[in-house]
Every structure is written in structure tokens, then in C-alpha cells.
Image (tube, rainbow, N blue to C red):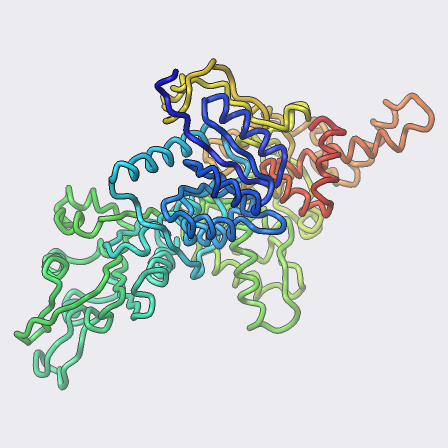
Length: 581
């Protein structure tokens, strides 16, 4: 044990429970830990203690985490800082990466994943000390990408990492998923941001015109060429050229493009003068280029030349939790150009949107919102205003053999509940409140389940991970239909369709929420045998269920749950303790 060097981890977070959890978990695997409850104290500890890695919360009073991060990086440009945030929107993630964060963690998170990320950061730190070249500081900027889901968080991180590196990038993803927005985000956060960004769609241009569009032409090069014209390579000089749908480019043009990428010069059609070009290439495709290579439809040498970095943009059906956010953003964009007061979506409309598979991805969603906004004559958009294919999909997914298409009244009063199988880590509501304070990892230097080794950790006894990071939620958890998007995995949706409705809903498929509540209150009153306790018994039962489901909707995130409920976080915490949630 004496031969091991204990790595030093600094945790800066204003929440006592988070600091307590990290202290126990990190000490269990052998790290030396120091805690700071404010940004000011964290900076002081960092200057005097010089940790090997810092875990930093973004939202803190007095001095926010981004300010702390900036000052840490100014004091030590090689510092490795992992930021933690309950607000996993693009702007927060991108801003943190731009400020030099090593990585971002969205609360709540799995302690095993966190330990693995810490190990990775410490390995990178050790490599730097051994004079191994390190990764450059990531930089990114928001240019219209919307979404807080984990797949989009990974996209944001990659944008930040590649933006300042002058390398070619291949963006893959289905049509309508937003590939050009990713290209723009890379360009406008790069050193070429002040230079032009040119986009060309390889599908929209015929093979006969593609060469002249890319490289330009000289006067008299062909019939109708009355004057010389520069191509997009020249027009994008010093900036970025985005080649959309590259997979549709023919083999001859692929050969010409490869030559330009290798030689960094072009020759206009009908000319003989070599023109030097300084352009960054970002390409995108919705085709499987690896299969195209096997079928001799795409050059493998061009593929490897283009794909220095590959960013895969997930389809909308794989980030369902982003659909309400995107829909709201589109509504906001439409409002200034339409007559009347701004409109909003009913719960039923949101449910329909989240249940649909969106083969056209974000572009199709935007068109659906545009249609619904136009057809609605009220300030509330109902399911009936959505495209028919969206409404049909919603009808099919409700897990009841007696379900019928939602009526206008049902749309406005949509508060029914459906069982959701398997919630994510951190969503558990079944652990006692005292176990909510921590995630204690009783782990040896090498994790027996994952085989992960933690550098700088002293071997200690092994055990289990408990607390906020345990996944003990049963399959019978009741969630509002409007949180259906959080069952984003296709397997969850398959299970969802097979599960029976809760007993409280099975007696009458046409029963309204008001009738269900009436029967529920009557049942609770019958269970109350002491005079003077009826009100407290019923209200406590309702409040407990409200808190349980609100926490589940926000994946156990207390900050977002408190904001959603309109109460303070301290009030929420006291109620969690009261009801043993």
C-alpha cells in the first residue's frame, strides 16, 4: 500500500449531501478528498492544495461554477475540472466546455460512471506530467441546436473538442436531424469563425454541374459561360465548406475532391491555373458510407480522408425527452410572425408528439408544429390539430385494449396515468430518506463488475453502491402519461404496451380523472378510523404521490422538481424526509 500515490480530488458543491456522498465514495476507493461548499473557498483550497482533479458544481450562490472554472484554468491551464450540473441544456454544457472543462456530468449521475470518468481524467493528467501531448481545450457555441438529452450532450462535447482543431469532420445522421446546425456550431466556434461558411447540397446539383459549382469555371469553358465564376472552394476561402449529402456524389467527383483535399489547390473548369485554397471541409451524409465502400459506390481513401472525426447525430426517436423542448422552441419562433396571442400545447398534444416515431426527425416536427399552429383557432393547440399520422401513432401506443382516439375534452383534461417500466439511475423513490444522502461506493482498486482500475486509489474492501445512485424502482411505478418520453428506449416502449393498467383505472375505461379522484378519496376516508385525521390522511397521501411522480419526471433532480412544483428546494427536502421518499 505504501507504494501507491493517492490522487487528490477537490469537490466544490454547495449541497451538503453531494459533498458527503462524494467524500464517502471517493475515500472508499482510496482517493484523498477535500471539500469546499463555496466557489471562493474552492479557489483557496485549489491554490494551496493543488488537487489532481476537481469536481465542480455549476450553479452555486455567491460565485457560480463557470467563474470558478475560469479562474482555475487561469491559475493552472493544465487543470482537469469535471463540471456537474442539474441543467443539462446545450448552452450550459457548451459554455463549460468552452471555458476548458475536461468533461460534464448531468445530475443525477451513476457513481460508477463518475468514478470511471475520474479515472480517465487522472490518466490524462498523468500523461501530461510525462510530457505526452494532451487534448486541446474544447470550445463550442450554440447556433440553434436544441436538446438536453444524454445523446445530445455527447454531440455538444464533440463540437467543443473539434471546433478549434482544423481537421475534417464527417457528420452522420438521418435526414432532418440537424446535421448542418452541427456544422455551423463547429465553424462559428473555430478560428475560422470570422470567415465565410458555405454549404452545398450534393444531391441538389446534377453531376454535370457539380465540378463547376465546386471549383468554378473560366470564361468560354462551356456554352453559356460568358464570364469567369469562382466556385465554392474559392468563395469559402479561409472559412468552412459544408458538403451535405456527400454519399450522393459520383465516383469521378469523389476522385477530384480527394485530390483537392490532399493538394489544397483547385483548377477551374476550362482553366489551367492552380489556385491555392485554405478551406476546412465538413461533410455530412445520411447514407451508410461503410456499406457504400463495400458496394464500390464510395471511395475508401476519400472516406478515411474525410472522417478524421465522425459525429453521429441521433434521430429524434432516440431522444424523445427533447421533443417537448423542441416543440416549445418552434412555437416561440412562430409566434412573432402570426396573428393573435402566442399559443401553447395541451398535455394531450405533447403526449401525441412524444409517442410518434418522427421518421423525418426535427424537420418533420417543425412542420407538424407549423401545421398545428395554423389550424388552431384558440390559444391551446390540441391533438386534433396535429397531422393525422401523429394522432394515429398516439392512439396505438396507449396500453389499453379499450382505448379510443382522444376527444377534445379528454385532450384538455389528460391527467391519466400509465405504468412505466425501468426508470433510469437516480429515479428511485423506494429507498428510505436517510439513504438518500449518499452514494457510497465500497469498491476495490479494480471494480469487480466492470474491470475498471482507478489510478491513484488505495485498495480497500469491496461492497455495493447504495443511495441516490441505486436503481431499485419497481416496474409498477405510476407516471403521468405526459412523461412517456422518458421511456426513450424502444424496449421500454414494447414493455409499456404489454403492461396492464393500474387497478384504479381498470374498473371503467371511460372514467374521468375527477371520478377516479372521488373514488380514491372515498377509499382513503374508509381507511381513516380516527376522528380529526381524515384531512391530514388524505392530503398527505395525495401530496406523497405528487412528490413521488414529480421526482420521477425529473429523474430525481431536486432542483428541477422544486422549480416544477413551485416550492423551494428546502421545502422539497423536508417533504422527502417526511414521506421517506
